Length: 186
Image 1: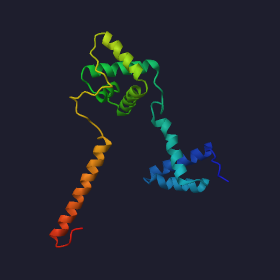
Image 2: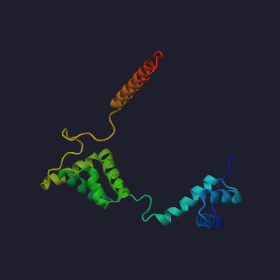
Image 3: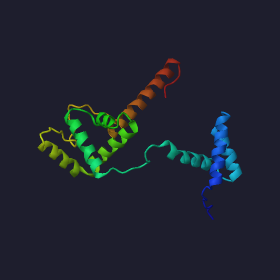
Image 4: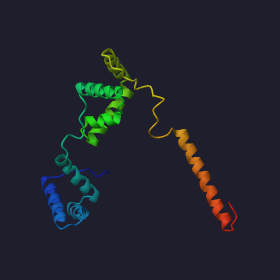
């Protein structure tokens, strides 16, 4: 029968925090505190460690771990990014500016924009059409500009080709080294 997970009592939480604080005061690794508490409470050290860091997260985090975008936020994000692209700015630069330099928020905005392109192309097209009607020359985000160099991971076929070329060069180098040392090339 599977062991049923039991929650943490306030006393156990207090003991864990006290042990962690004591370890920090003595400049000892937290692992020592986790091991001691795990033994005392008949828990696994990794479970103790995970619980400790889970308890710290609400204190350290200024905003919730996940907060969905409202419709207004989504429209504002879409409008801002499309207008930035109309002015020649990249999505990354625009979202970083929107986030005030906070890379975590920038990634949130960038991921939301990319998700809109993939999951709601009709919404993106409608916003683009609205901005065009207002006189903005908004580029089509679904069409890649041939003058813009591709940034990112190469297509899979190119990656496989690169791997094959590297393997061939490695073999040639090994054979060359073997021949220069008087051995038979393999």
